[in-house]
Image 1: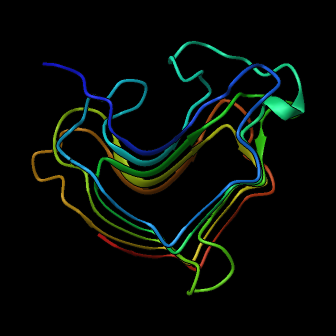
Image 2 (image 1 turned 180 degrees about the vertical axis):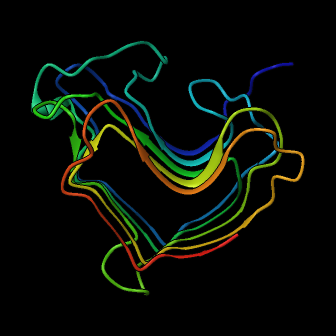
Amino acid sequence: GTAMMEWGYGFFRMSATEGAQNNTIQNCGIHMNRNNNTSLGAEGSVGILSLNLSAALGANTPTAATGAFSNNKFYANTIQNVNYGVYISGFASATLGDAGNDIGGSSALTGNIITNIGGGGANGAGAVRMTNQYGFTVSYNSISNLVGTAHTGQLRGIWADGTANNTNVSITNNAINL
C-alpha cells in the first residue's frame, strides 16, 4: 500500500544546532485517521509528533544542546482517531538528548484527552510514546478506547522506551480506560 504522511503537528530539527524548543500546543482539537498504520517516519497517524529527523525525514543528529527537542508543553488538547496521540522520539544522549517535555501539565485542567487509538496493522499503537527522553512529565491525561480489534501490533496506554535511560521521569495522575 501507499504510505501516507499524517501528523496533526510535527516538530523536526532544522539543523544539528536548531531543534524545536519552548513551544506550547494548547486547547487544540486533532482528529486523524487511525487506520493509517504506515505513515512516513512514524508508526501511522500521530496527533503530535517529534522525531530525531529533519523535515525531509533524513538523519539529523544534534551537535549542541540547542539541537534537541526540549521544554515543549502539550496541554488541554483533544486528540482522537490516531495510531499514536503523542509520539516524541529523541537522540539517545544525556547531554544532547531531548529534555523537559511535558504532556498534560500539573492539573486536570491542563491534561489532554486522547481517545480512539489504533485501527489495524502490525505496527504498535498507543496514547503517548516517549523514546530517548530526559526529565519528561506525562500527567493528568485521560486515555480511552484503544480500539484495535483488527490491530495485530501491540497497543499501549503510555510507553517510555529507548536505549537511553529515561531519567527524572514523572508519569502520574493519568486516567487510562482501555
